[in-house]
Image 1 (cartoon, rainbow, N blue to C red):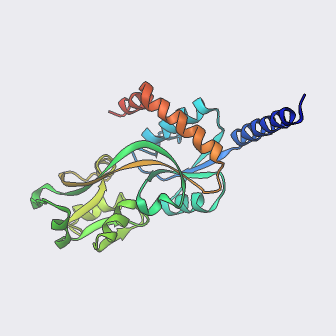
Image 2: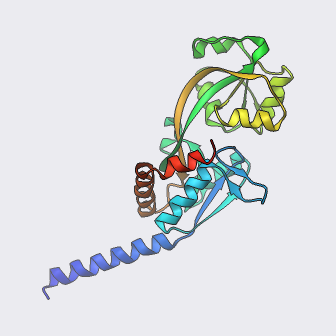
Image 3: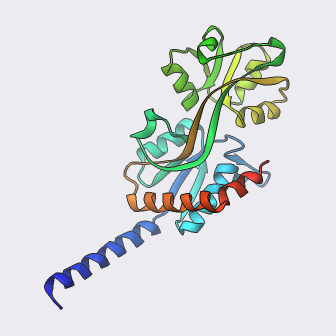
Length: 241
């Protein structure tokens, strides 16, 4: 065997071993209680649209993982600071793009303003909302986006608290997700809320620590694209409709 052929064979073997080793690593995933994307069921199992997509994604990709439910800021900081860690469902915004390696999109997220129907608030543009008191929560991409546009928000630690604040007229508008907001309102026994404006749509994915293996990231993205193409993602959505 010629020397260059031998060296090429050795290099390919080393690359294969490295790829297999990276696949064997356990990925730590963190998330928050943010239904219907991430939540706890009656058996104390983490579930939801994004979670179900992730379970199928990692199963098909033969990558081991564990999931922990945390308050959002802790979940986010864990992925930001720890190798082989990821946080979901994370809105993929320009401000966050360079801070992570991304596996996305898991889902598409609509940012909306909710208001009490009886208030008859009508908005034609995002600018129209500036005269109102708006509720959001700390660390949320929706709140960060509005703040970048010059809004001052009334922030809380959990998004579900905004349903109560809206019901008690402590805020005029609630900046939240088109699916998650109504879910939280229902859990808080708050009724009579309406969407008054959809002001942005953004993809949501898994935001991985920058030191996570690029082989894992590329492999997961390839599998995720296949799941979108073969209908696997749509089938999971149908379970929640």
